[in-house]
Image (cartoon, rainbow, N blue to C red; front, side, top):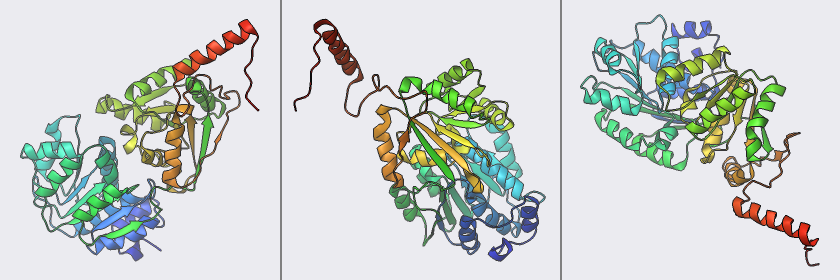
Length: 413
């Protein structure tokens, strides 16, 4: 199957040829004809399967055949949960529409409103924005949604996870009732599907990969080890494997910064990516990572959503996520666009319940192995229902009794 057979025309075909896009991916094969036909779409596909192009390409073609947008009245609105993802989609739109008259703008928080307002006043056919900044622009009367023909909610599940449900519903009230609506995401839990079906009209459901599944091209390795040795184990893996580019996931901003310092002690250049950093600092960290100036990027789940590196070889779960679906999102950063990828998880005893939740979600077991030289002692880790402080005290008292009395309690036969 070719892009031409899906209904795409010149000059988009020439652009795709220049970008070395040879064949459409599965999600593109399913979504492009449906979008060109005006259907609402509910599409679930893993990160790296080409879902951004799946909604941008058909909409660009349609916009090329329409009059230019008026000031402050975009025709295509793409809503994304994070600044990084919004910028990534905007970059893709500009790349696919290169050389055309179509104008693309991006709007997100953390930077000045003024340039974004100016771009809107000059006129944009395509606007990619985060929910909060979108409402800010509307409140500033710099933007009206009355001319929007198509709404795209990208990473819809993440938007709900981040608490943007109220913002999304507020935006929907400002949009024309007669519009095309497209939901794209890596996963679609029941809550998102329920919301989608309440908003979409006779949508075409596209699930290229089973819901909450993991990509076959990703090798998954789980090391069982003591929590206190995780930093040393990570440094060993990076050094012994000569990893030049590894994305490491942690749960907290403080944990990200602390791990950067730990790796520096082992001579490994790293930087952190999280919400407390300014947009400029986050972009510099990401640029340094892509350019190879740093070997490890330590990120929280939210901040990493916009990372788009096709050939990223390694992803590490330094800590397992509390939300099992985040595991799917995390490891989806590697093994993209048909490339092989390796996802490594460092699992301590207190995370075994989180691992069980992940296994239940993806419907497959994830056996753990030991990393040579970092075999777990378990003496300081939390068992499933235990108290580590009490366990240590009990073990200490038992050892003292054995030393003093020479007594070793045996189990009843």
